[in-house]
Image 1 (cartoon, rainbow, N blue to C red):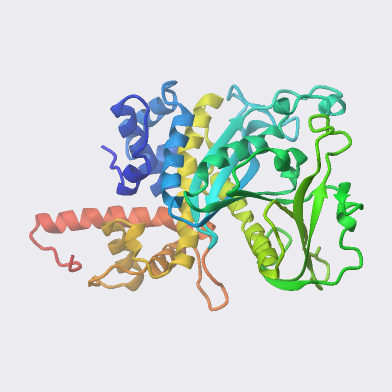
Image 2 (image 1 turned 180 degrees about the horizontal axis):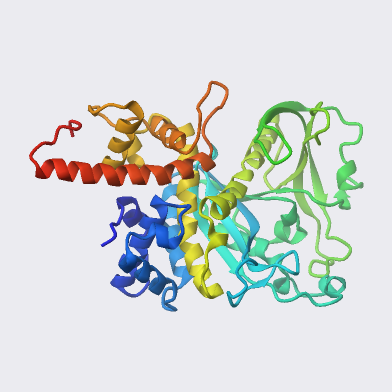
Length: 467
């Protein structure tokens, strides 16, 4: 029978699928997938019986994806409850299953010839970049595009537009403000909507959105992107930019400006026509002397929280730099967990599988950044005893185990080395890609370790380690 890892029990302690047998199957499946995130279902499951049980679970209409997501969200709420500040980051991604034409129930993607699922996630993150988990997620399909739909989009009720997902994310975020603390809901340019700032929210929930379009302002009487014309920088900020396709990692030096303004509804905004202006604070962070041939950073951030000092302005910039964590989260889902390679017959089965893989992706993201922010934690917060013991002996080439488990940072670096991380002086900390590769190799090592220990114990000759 497939084993259930202790962290899985804790993560799904609030699970309610209506049947204890379903709970057991889900915990077994989650444990198996977390041990081998990049493996296919047949590879991740330990034997034919476990694979059959996994497929039966994914095909069971009584196993609602929303219930799986809610169990994880409840655990997320527990992790953020004692924090004074939590960042809630929302974003949308596409899951492309065009390569599986026999899967039914899929919808169109941004390219009409493609088919798949649309996913909008709300991720809770600590200010030190450690992911706390998903708070909410929406999965849907898009019908075939109707000719001239764009021309009629402005006249459709807001609740019938895809942009409603940002308002749904705001509604969900209200339930994840820490008691006695504050939360900041962060979105990219797609979430630049007057309705988001005009919507009611508790005073402890703030908004931070990157502006996407030119706007008329009520105060001052000008346009948004002209508000700092001729102004001098009020401060500076150094920002580490992660490597992206076509851009090397670098440290950017930003000039920072801020000012209070009043936003007006857009001329074509029928939903909010006639509503009074909304007060926000604009923070502009503009890169000084970007490298030749590269586009410099130029962020126009809209904050519902007052910005009257340099410290408050820099806090807005820092928080927005963490928005890319949700992109890494979606990247892990697609590449680390390979969800787009799943060969399941229906969109409903895919959504159930996605609900499970979302927890796996969060755990990989969490370990990557927790090892940086809390490097001295014992690795037992993430690894079972036989896992860290097998890892230690493999990486040190020693048969003698230490009295105490290695640190989380050391263990994560070792796992990443199994996945190809070199660890040279200028390489920095390992990323999620080498971590998920290494995790799969670690599970093979750990399985061999258990077999060897069992065999030696049976022979009365347990001479490896001191545990």
